[in-house]
Image 1 (cartoon, rainbow, N blue to C red):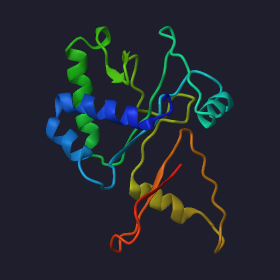
Image 2: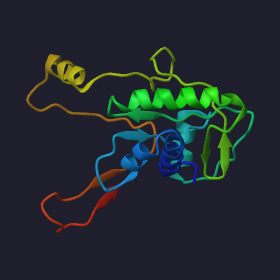
Image 3: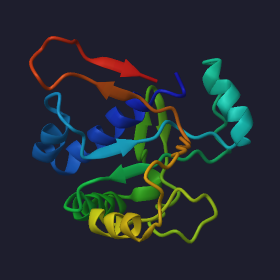
Image 4: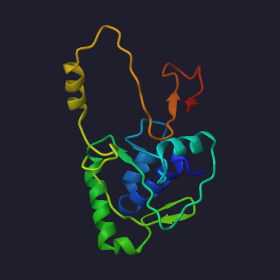
Length: 173
């Protein structure tokens, strides 16, 4: 299932577990808000072709000569130093010669980590919630304003009732 973000999610938590088992457990346990997000494995192909493959849930063969990307979004600033420390430990342990992450049964080497918006993907950057609020306040919006969302990877929303257990969890793709 190449478009399963759960595989990347599990692989990332497993990778963090090697450096900080208690934090990996805290991030994994319970049905609570996640303090990070993980994209699906991104294949080196045109976005439209990738979207067609996702919608059709089609199998894609991995090519060991190609580069594949994932995006990890940290929603809690305290996770960034842990991520950096874990990368440093990985590098000191031999880095590029060993598998960085195992997704399913496939082993992936780490080619690079991009943390600034200097690349052309528009997938990289950082901000704070305070900065987002200030940017939203600066917008001159009408009382009702249409909003368009674009998702670059398969996204699931979890809707549930916080007022008792009248409704079961509902996941929408």
